Structure formats: structure tokens, C-alpha cells
Length: 187
Image: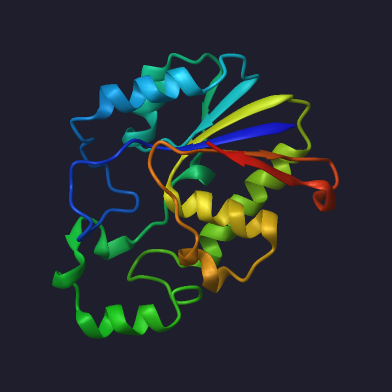
């Protein structure tokens, strides 16, 4: 099966905010970014799986695809008590502790990277058993990085070495046998 993966469009808050599962406003470029995806994406997806967070739902709605399933596994990492706060306003001792092992340490009342990776892995393994030919995933940078980790079988601690840009389209082939999965291209 051919799987297309896109990230939601840019948001209207700065990079200095922690906003994993928080609903945040979209940037003024939303309509232009949506037009980019309309031009670049095929129209014949068997199914579209979309994070239920508003920044993804709005994109799915604007792209006017049918057969959209809102999938919790595609939500961004839950940062718990850190959601919607500036990184510099967080307790720096807690932040430094988390940064030393962000793979295993949970954010306060949130999740860790292992948990995010596990839900992505369960979703992909379930998707692998479907009979679709072409699928679209509308999701977030953390989830997309986990997809890369899953496909390339690289250590989870290297996740932030993978750049995930807005308006990129990541395409891979998902086969019945995981050893035959392949990355097709990035547009």
C-alpha cells in the first residue's frame, strides 16, 4: 500500500511554545498552504486517517476528501502540564531532567516518547493488515518522526535529527512484510 503523510499547516504561535495536543490557531497562510496540498496530492485515496486535533481536522476538511477517519493514534505527543506554556516559563529543573532522557521520562501528567512511538507502531501494524492501495495520513511532526523511526529501525533517541517541514509530502510503501517496507520519496 502506498501511504502519503502530511503535517498540518503552520500554526500562529511561536516556536517558544509547547503545544503538543493543545488546539492552537493556524497561521494566516492556511488557505495558500491548503492550495499547495490540493495541487500536490492525488485525489484517489481509499481512506484518509487524520489526527482529531483541530489543526489537522481543519486541513482535512479544507482538502475535501471523503472517507476521513479521525484517529487518536495520530495525535501529537501529550505534554501534560506543559501544554500551551512557553518553554522558558517551565520549571527549568524539570525541563532539564526531561531533556536528559526525553525518550523514557514523561512530562508532568503527559506522556513520553516511548508511549507516542507505541501508539504509532500499533496504528501502522493495524494499517498494514488493511486492503487499501493508497492512504493519506494527516498528522504532526512527532508522529511523522516516529514513522521514520519505525520504517528505518533507528534508535528513538535520534528522533530530533529528522527534519519535518510544513508543506512536505512524505510517501512510503507499507507491505505485508515489514522487511519489504520502503520509503518512496519526499516532495
